[in-house]
Every structure is written in C-alpha cells, then in structure tokens.
Length: 175
Image 1 (tube, rainbow, N blue to C red):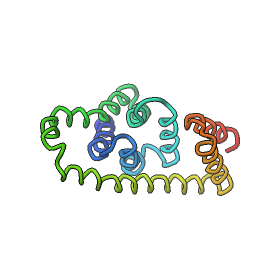
Image 2: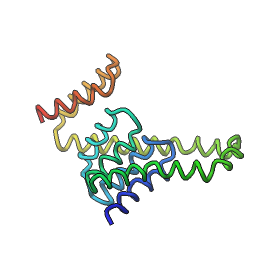
Image 3: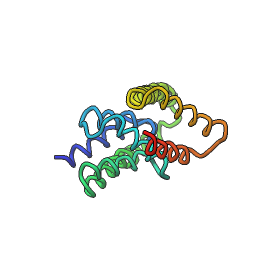
Image 4: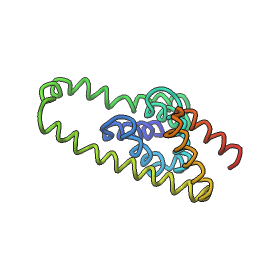
C-alpha cells in the first residue's frame, strides 16, 4: 500500500500543480507533511533546500528522495514516475487539443489567473518555513540566516547552491 500512497502523493500535485515544480511544491508538502505525516515541516524544508541545491527538476529530486525514504529503491522509482506521469499523460492525450486552442483568449486568461494562486501558495509555504524556523531555532538565528542569505544572494550575487550549503554547514555546526 505504501507504493500506492507514494504514487498518489506525487501524482496528484503533478496534476494540480500548474506551472511546474515550484507550483507543485506546496501541494507536495501538503501530501507529505499533512496527509501522510512522512516528514515534519522542518524535514520537508531541508529536503526542499537540498533539492534546490542539486541540478535538475526539483519535483523529481524530491520525489526520488521521499520515495526512497518511504519505500526504498522501488519507492524512489514510483515517486519519480508519479511526478513525470501527469506531464506524459497530458502530452500524449491533449496535444491536439492544446494545439487547436493555444491562441484562445480563454486559455490565455486561465494562465493569467492561475499565477496569483501559485504566488499565494508559495507565500504560505515560505511563511510556514519561517515560522517553524523561528520556533525551533529562535529569533536571533532566524534573522541572522535570513540577513546573511539576503546579502549573499542579492548583494554579492553568490549562487544559491553555495548559500544553501553554507546555511546547512552553519546549522550543522551551531544549531
């Protein structure tokens, strides 16, 4: 039954997460943290940070890691397939329909209206990560990491992977 749950945990966000990996992350979090309780919010945020640091699509990396964590190598394969399956199905089944209506005003408006929903979902997830960090490590550590991350990313244009590795190292040494 675990493989079916792994499949559903990544297939459903893949179907509903219009906009790719970043749009489906809050949906995956809901499945993994809230529905199946495989991880805490903190653990999920660590998996998300690790997935962001590695090259390639984030959704498949997270699905592989979480699937492996819950069901071994077969779980990883099921998770990765479940993440890719919605796109494969839509490409095969809907290609003609999409080509026929790609210039439709209704389709363009739908795309425009979905973007704010994705932004709200990502904002809620960022707030939850911040709040759990504040609760677990305290205000000083949270503000220090936020400030340092801002400076490294925005001021000095350091690659996000290096910032994530630095934050993980800091957390491993001092927290």
